[in-house]
Image 1 (cartoon, helix red, strand yellow):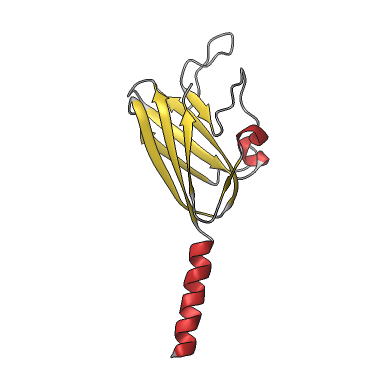
Image 2 (cartoon, helix red, strand yellow):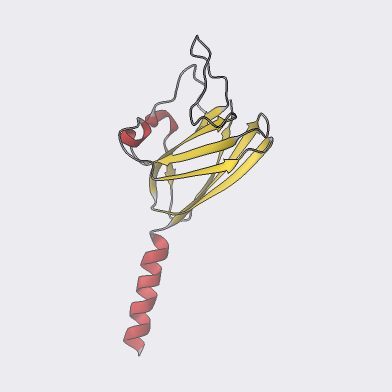
Amino acid sequence: MTRTLVLLFSVATVTSSLAADLDVRLTRVANDKGQILVAVFDSEDGWDGRAKARAAQRVDASKGQVDLRFPDLEPGRYGVLVMHDENGNGTLDKTVLGIPKEGYGFSNNPRLMRRARFDEAVFELPEGGRRIEVEMR
């Protein structure tokens, strides 16, 4: 019985230490039209569209602030990409000059006049989890 309890405890410890929750707070959401798409990437290939996102959510937009949770991610390096799809067409609409007409954001909130690279948006997710804030642009 003692051996069984020790085995169960060690499995529970290993399982819980391999999972971390990522809480994402979006700020400055322009309006409550459409949906917010949030994708979590664990590689440059995923960030650049050559691999699937590690996790993703689509939620109804809410003006001001939106909170999301991505549970049970492995601790490691991640980047978060956010798009406010106001008209529901699944793409970030842009002007003829290529300037986004809908809201977007990246983890680490880099101030760029272009799409952030993975290395500019990457952050560490520790075993205990983490909360990040993404300011919509």
